[in-house]
Image (cartoon, rainbow, N blue to C red; front, side):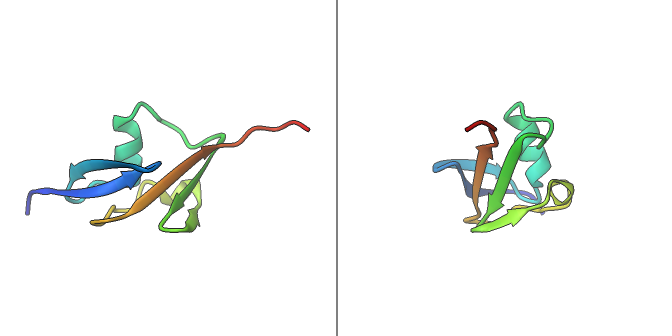
Length: 71
């Protein structure tokens, strides 16, 4: 099965291949590690270890936030 689906990445629509994982999407965007990032999919926080196996679905809303320390 081939084709594309549309997802949202930080509020921007993005077309990805059917069967694309979150890790593949991030790699395409130049992000090769989730270290220092929080990742949310459809309102649920994802553990970095789950990104590789997280297959994106039509309409998924992905939010990436860089974690910074300080006070």
